[in-house]
Amino acid sequence: MPDHLAPHPDLAGYVLGALDPGETAAFEQHLAGCDACRAEVEQLRGLPDLLDQAAPPVEVPPGLRERTFAAVERAAAGSRRRPPLRLAAVAAAVVVALVGGVVVSQLGGGRGQVIEVALAAAPGQSGRATAELRPAGDGVEVDMEVSGLAPNRDGGVYECWFVGPGDTLERPNRVSAGTFRVGPDGRAALRLHSGADLRRFPVMGVTLEDDGGDPRRTGDKILVSRPIG
Image 1 (cartoon, rainbow, N blue to C red):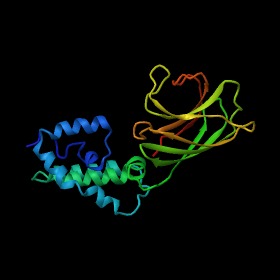
Image 2 (cartoon, helix red, strand yellow; image 1 turned 45 degrees about the horizontal axis):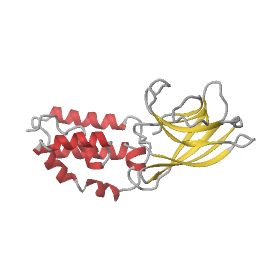
Image 3 (cartoon, rainbow, N blue to C red; image 1 turned 60 degrees about the vertical axis):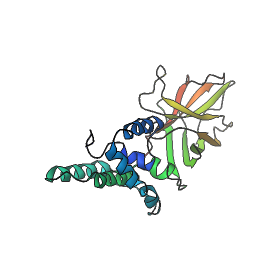
């Protein structure tokens, strides 16, 4: 018998290829000693191809993921027999595929769907931007239009970021998508690329930086988005 609840919390993500490298390595280490999980992975290998044949993902109501998992847990608790691991894993995998939204269905699935993001001025700043995110190889391609920004001063550049939880100047948790300048009218249309994983870095932002080659964020926040997805 496995030494964990059914299904293993990372089983669905592993089958769908939705884990980050560290999570994948940890689960594969677990697989080496868990006959039950190895059997379930083998039986579920065809699930990603099956989901790829389904209709394109749609925006689902808030809380659907939590309600679905709660229903699965209630059904399991109300049964005298332990539910088959495979049935629970399939339910979890389908929820991940449907509700994973931005990353699994749109970026990870390779279906070419566009994610639209709006960035507003940070407190005390001015300007706005709209961005379209598309899957591109090992990351995300960003087509962005900005307006209302102050023209660049000498030695200054704007920098676009994907930002994770808890980010501060002292403890940065962000990935750069590149730098840009605006014209005298405060506008620019640009294409950038980032290797950011939107599950880990779900907020977009723009800062004003000194063009001195320092890769860290040191300047003021200018624009910021709500969490993506």
